[in-house]
Every structure is written in structure tokens, then in C-alpha cells.
Length: 192
Length: 192
Image (tube, rainbow over all chains, first blue to last red):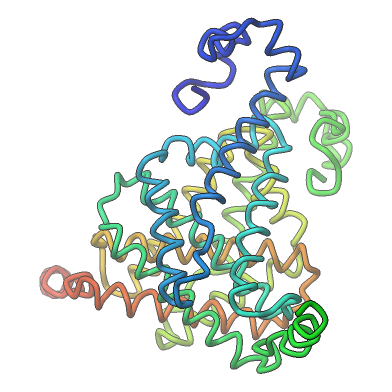
């Protein structure tokens, strides 16, 4: 709804009608239209995070490709929603900025977990943050240009830049590649 | 000024005082505080574009590094301004979105010109757009994390991803690498 029409054009009545509930019930859960909007964006963010959850049964490189494919599938289905959240959201409510940041942190946390690293050194953190920004920018461009590029080509571009960034980060600071092996073995020893 | 304080806290009087001109003169040039704000952002965008103008006398790889260095120098000096424009600008005035898009288009146009390509095929366009988004994301992360990473390391990360993206784009679609050689030679022939 928010993706299809301008925020200012949508009333609380419209939202209640669309949801098939009373305005009173809506106000029971949300203090204002703005709060509803922010929560709708938070829900979309969580939805996308669920869809892109890495599959631990896959080997690492297939895991990355599967997660990117899931992301691009979402974009193909919900492009307008993604655009609304990432382009327009902040102008409606600054809280959206915090939701987007949190989303990025979760994605980066997953990548780090796959790498076996809990506290990234600056070079790795920046490389991953740059990569996440690139995925967003590429996704928005893909939507704006009506997916002229095939999904497979876009995925391979994103994988190539991921590999190049990590490779360079580990060359610039070899310590950045050190996994949490000590901690992991200690935890394993105590938990198992 | 807009970087140091919240937009809503700044009055037209403050702006006039800071500029050392009368409120009347300010209103002669700008219809409103918002118009002034948008024009201030446009001026910052042009300033950054000037600073990062590629030097045609340098060989291509040095040209890219010099432009990235100029960009990162700007970030080091004017980090808060960059942050204000890229994070907060759109929430004050949606026109800022158009200024940012125009900025990106100019940067992409420069890269394409360096490659000798005027009309990029989709794979190259998306690769470059993704790279530009990555430069923005990395810059914002660098500011937020107080430049823990050295400028040289950040530049090399950005160069590495540029090289990887272009390399992959040209592999996915070899025609994307075709430069405007015909057009160029024709133009050269006619211009003498």
C-alpha cells in the first residue's frame, strides 16, 4: 500500500479498510500512522532477512549464491516495496534509517559467522559494509532499469566483488582472516 | 551549518547572519530556507565533483586512484557534510534524491568516458552503479567508524572491487567492453 501510493495520501481509514479491521483496533496496536508505517517497514526487513537466511547445510560458496539468489528473488517480486523502504522510507520517518542499519548489521553478522569471525578488524568490516551497500545500490538500479540484466549475471557480479573485496582485505591485513578458532574450540570443549 | 545542527533548529536569520548578508538579500536569491538548503547541497555536490575530476594526463589506473584519493580527502575534511547530504538530506527535501542521482550519473559518465564507452550495456551499467553505491557506503562507514582504516587501504579495497566488477562484467558480456572506436575515429577525422 505504502509502495503503491504516497505516504501523505494514505489515511488511517484506508489502512484499517485494507486490513479489514476497525480503526479502533488499529489504534490499539499503533499510536499513529507513522508508527504503523515504521512497523510495516520493520516487518518487511525481517521478512527479507528470513528469506535470505543462509543454509548451513550448503558449502560456503553455494551458501553465498543461494542467499544472493533469495535476495534477488525478493527484489523481483517486491521491487516497489524495496524501493519504497530504501529510497523513500527515511524521508517519511528517520527511524527507518535505524531499521536499515540494523538490517545491514544482521547481514554482515551472517557473513562474518560464515567466515568464523566474530569481531572483524577494520579492513574486513569496511569491506563487508561496502559490499552490503553495493548489493543495495545494485538492487535499486536493477529495479529502476526494469531488470535488463539477468538475475544470474547480477548475482555473479555481486559474488565477484565479494571475493575481490575479501581477498584484498585479507592481503591488506592478514590478521583480518584469523577465525575465532581458539574461542570456538574452547566453547566446543565446554558445551560438548 | 546544516551539518553541525538540525535543519529545524536553523532559521533564515541564522543563515543570513552566518553569511554576513541581510535577510532581504537572502530572500532575493532563495524563496525559502528549504530552497537554500537544496542549493547548498547542490553546491557541495558540485564541489566534490570538481575535486574528483579525473586528470587526463595520468594513465588510466593512476587516474582512478587519484580520483578516489581526492574523494577520500574530501571525506576526511568534510565528513559531517557528506554524512548530512547522504544520510539526512532526503528526509529534509526529496529534491536531494535527484541531486544525489545526478551526482552518481556524472561519476559513472566519467568512468565510462575513461573506458571510451558512451552507451554502456546493462551489465556494465549495473556494475558501475553498484561500484558507485559501494564507494558511498564505504565512505559513510569510514566516517561513522572514525576512519579506523587507513585511507590507502580503503582506496585499495575500492580499486580491487572496481577491477573485479569490470572484469566480471566483460566476461559475462564481452560486447560490454567494446569501446566507441568507430565513433571516435570518425569524430577525429572530421574535427581535424
